[in-house]
Length: 187
Image 1 (cartoon, rainbow, N blue to C red):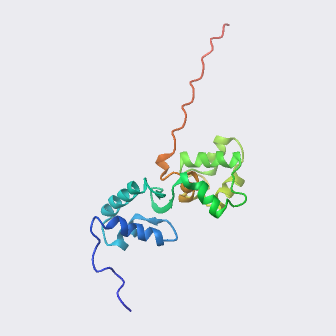
Image 2 (tube, rainbow, N blue to C red; image 1 turned 90 degrees about the vertical axis):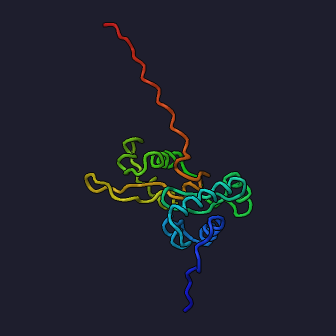
């Protein structure tokens, strides 16, 4: 069987394109370490090349999507109407207000437990968590240390693609809560 390892590491100029090719053929999001190993370079070199690739994509129809752990190629969100015209928007793709509330809590507090979600929403969220998991917008991120060892949830790369952002760091800041008004009551 022939040796499938490249004869040489790519040059610094070639590395972004090697990583692009790796991400293009990958069926699943890839961790930085796997990309660096496949390219035969250090993680630092791969990270720098991915940053260059992301910058290059800003003027094109693709985006480098990363969730802090894994990378994937995706379409630029501004071209979503064209993609929908070609592929169609599948049935049942809209999320209910309650599912969006649940997803928002997970996005801003990740990782978080279902109990934390329910404490904020004030209602049972089992169904909405299950729907979001089924659609691939959230995933289990581990097990919490609390009583019953609850599941911890976080958003996925599919979440980033769905909302047209490249990283959770691009989430808009939460609005400041207004300070409670102090009412002087006369006794």
